Length: 271
View 1 (cartoon, rainbow, N blue to C red):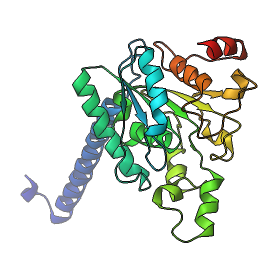
View 2: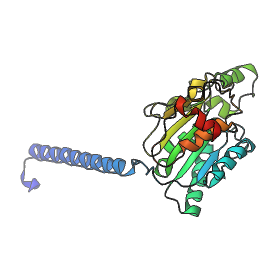
View 3: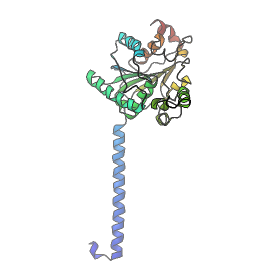
C-alpha cells in the first residue's frame, strides 16, 4: 500500500503515523503513572484500634531516658518496644529512618497488629517523619507523637557546626535550620496522609531553639505550658515528666488525637 504512493507522500504518511504512535504511548504512560500514584498514595490509618508503641530516642541514641515513659505506657495497658538506632545515632537521619522502617515492620509482623504508634523524642521525631514520608511508614503508622523535636531545626546545631571542626556530625548538620534535609522534609505537606500527628513541646526547652521549632502544620500542637502553665520542663525532662507522660498517654488513645486544654491540667497532674 505504501509502496504505491509517491516517495514524498510515503514519507509524510510515515511521519504522521510515528507522531500518532508517540502521542498514544505518552497518553498510555500518563495513565499508568497516574494509576500507580493513586494506588500507592497512603490512606488514613484507622484511629480507633491501637497497636503496639515504638519509642524512638533522640540524638546520640540513648534509650535509658525513655524507660520511665515506657513504664508509664505499659502501666496504661500498652505494649511498648524501644528502637535502637544504628551506630551511635549521630549519623545520617535517613539511615536511621530506614532502620526504623525495618524495626516497625518486624514489630507489626510479630504482634499481628494492623498498625503501630510511634513516639519520637527529640531528633527521633524527625526520624519518624522521614520514615512516614519516605520509607512506607504512612501505611502502618496510626499515630506519630513527637516530644521536643527540632522539626525546623535548632540553633544549637548551627552553633555547634560553627565552633569546632568535627563537633557537628552528619545528624547534627541535618538538624541545623535550613539544612537540605529539613528544607526537603518541610516542603509541601508537613504531616502527610496515613497517621495523625501530635507534637508536644515545652517553652523551657534548652536544646531545641527556638522551642516552637517543634510545631508542625497539620498536627495537634501541644505546648506543655498552655496546658499546665506552671509546668517547668526542659529538653531532657520531657520523657520523664509526669504531666508530659500523661499528655503522651492521652495523645496515643484510641480515636482522633485529643486537643488538651488548661482545664485538663488537674487531671493530668493527678493521673
